[in-house]
Image (cartoon, rainbow, N blue to C red):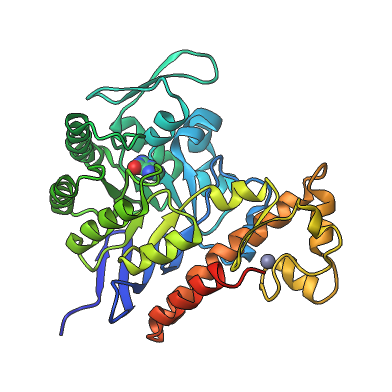
Length: 387
Ligand code: GUN
Ligand code: ZN
């Protein structure tokens, strides 16, 4: 019999069910801070906090794995403080899992002046303008101090979809070389899982070549990067599909920077297991509720006299209370969106819950062998049946 379980020093991965007509999978991932059910959406707590909610409120959404950024934590509170407190779990009082991105992507996308060389990513400190260099070794050292359950390799990411083939090839090949440097620098492979990141832009042959090189390095999990940059949806799908066709079954697959509900559902169908994005939490701070009928801007005057919950039938703390007639109505959220921060908190909780619950429903439908019907209903709700 073929085994459904694989393990690395700090991770086990078990396939629970597969869809018979798509590549969708349901799986169990066990990390140092507990089990995680896949597919899953990971909320982004950039500075070791999910803007607007407490770690306890995040726990109440059912989240068991969230993202932190090496770049932000490395600058502040900095490596010394992280070492002194014993890592990011302790710092934020979070007993569940943490994944850290390696930092390069954040610098390249936030600081337009970042320069990439073979050595690493050079940039000017946003605090005092002094020149800084993030190398693969330094990123891993920071992530070792952060103590995250999943750490990401430093990669050479192009934040443009413009097809400069030569530069794309250089970035892809450099990412492979940087993975080797990350593997050599990683001091805690028994408690932290290093994931590689497949690059290669929208060029499918380059993606295939990168998959082959990355797979050969046998990391405990595999990410697909270089997407979420505004590429066309069909290009996006072709890249994910090309990569998942080549990846080993018994490793988690993480598509970086993806977070619109429809993209999550489609990406699961293409064989991906993990996702992250700042969008659901960022859009909450602009007064937007993510619902199964699409995004509703609760600042709109039509909600001033709407005494229903943010989303009828939603199981999050805010909507449940509303349905029981105890508190949060759309009118309340609307009323508070201009000056008070409470609406941002409520919408953040609702949106995170929505994303996590969407993945829970997707998982259940895969397990019960009705994923295609679930997808059909999901799109019918989204496009045909506006609330
Ligand atoms: N976040 C979104 N895309 C990427 C990527 O390609 N690399 C890294 N490191 N982070 C990302
Ligand atoms: Zn809700």
